[in-house]
Image 1 (cartoon, rainbow, N blue to C red):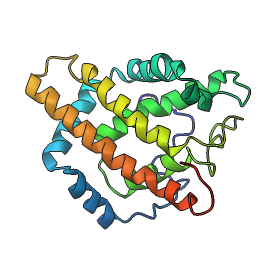
Image 2 (cartoon, one colour):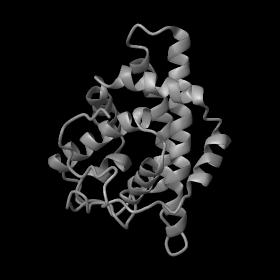
Image 3 (cartoon, one colour):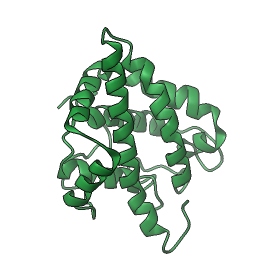
Image 4 (cartoon, rainbow, N blue to C red):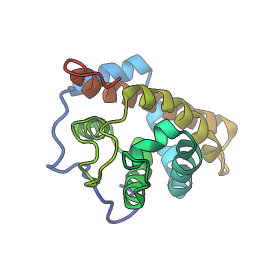
Length: 203
């Protein structure tokens, strides 16, 4: 499995530090069917992973440095409550963001992958946000912002998919598979937020 670095702070994929997801593999398969995620999409995602592997830093810098940094209500989630920057927090979470791109494209969607989707979501809720890096920032990222930002992640990835010598048909196939995967992940990330909504509003 490709990694963006030998050591990624706070990256615990496939370890005992990650709890088992309450979503079953059978439910995951149902979600795959619902989003229309096929074996062909898996092949296109693998292709996308090869195309994006040497571009992850540039992609995340665009997402974080150019887009999110210009949207105050999104940028604040990597800052102190007073609005001060936390450079090491941004640097470490950026590394995990880069690795997420590769995990999306190259990991098998098995129990480890399912468990880590739960972990990713929890790290954006009040249950785990800030704990991985030991920082003082916003207590949670509202789910509405995550869901809305998926559109940006989908639109902005296409130029990177088209940056190599792949055919237009392959680029379209990779982009289609990427969009389906993000929709699938969004459905999984919703689970912890819906559980928390029983006692507080994190929408």
